[in-house]
Length: 136
Length: 74
Image 1 (cartoon, rainbow over the protein chains, first blue to last red):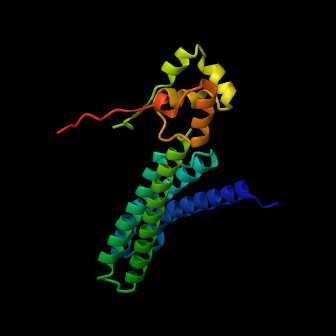
Image 2 (cartoon, rainbow over the protein chains, first blue to last red):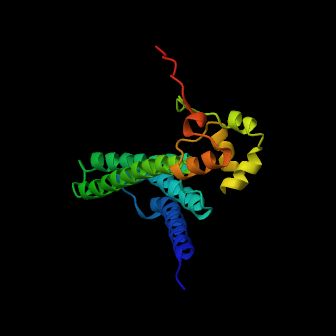
């Protein structure tokens, strides 16, 4: 039967696969992409995205341990959103060369905003939980 | 920083010669929660809890709760 913990596990597996794929692409890219501009752009985006994926991975591990309403999770969500914004800025700069990257910048920027809203939501939830836990 | 309402539960417990454990058992809350209340770590108290404590200690809410003005910091 499908249940909550299996869903968490599936998400965790997807994140690990994405992390692995991202690292493999980073290692393999110079072998099949000779354009220096593409390589520079990729490695500028590589680090923020790697950190964002790492943040998501850590967050998922914490959720699986049942640590939902904690300040560490807030910090991880903040990290993910800022890394998305950084990647969006790099893509925006690169869009001067390849205008189609504007779409990517918009997508990643929207993702960053979305994660930020989720972060604000969690912050409010933590306050409510705290209040509830300390109501006797 | 904290809430300026102080819970004087230990004073009332001493007057009634009752231990925290006994009170917790009588009003049906965990000793850990009662300790939060006693140590003024609580953010709120339910009317039902207050009612139970007043009943168990035969006192009024005013005997338990005191408002202490916070010191102003410039």
